[in-house]
Amino acid sequence: MNYTIRKMKQSEYPLLADFLYEAIFIPEGVTPPPRDIITQDELQVYIRGFGDRPEDICFAAESDGKIVGAVWVRIMDDYGHIDNETPSFAISLYKEYRGHGIGTELMRTMTAELKKRGYKRASLAVQKANYAVKMYKSVGFEITGENDDEYIMIIKLREG
Image 1 (cartoon, rainbow, N blue to C red):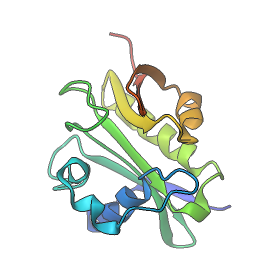
Image 2 (tube, rainbow, N blue to C red):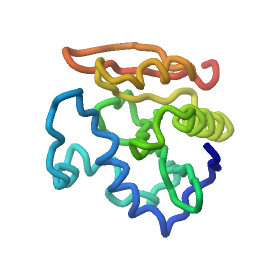
Image 3 (cartoon, one colour):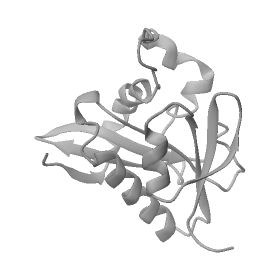
């Protein structure tokens, strides 16, 4: 599959609402939630005012002129929040583009950008049953905490 990874343009940030919905893990056999679930405050933290802060960073995956995936970070009080210096990840791809290495490349691109900007680490929260746990581990994330449903994972970007 041909695709490119590039910085997402500010004019494309409204697409993050679609990718936020796509990022919701839906186990096999479970009915997807209604689309308006993303209007809840605990999910809006990922996208509301995105681009207003210098630590808001986003990359897009593009295939045949269409944005098919995105990875974005910001320092926010989300499910994977560690502290106010650690960016939290969000990533998703449209279903038909999953399993082709695009997510892995998006993650690698973002971790390289965060290293370049001097961040010490980044975090994310992921449901334990989510197949993406394996991919997160493959790019260097480690499980550092958990609750009944989710892992908290951190990647060290530099020593210190």
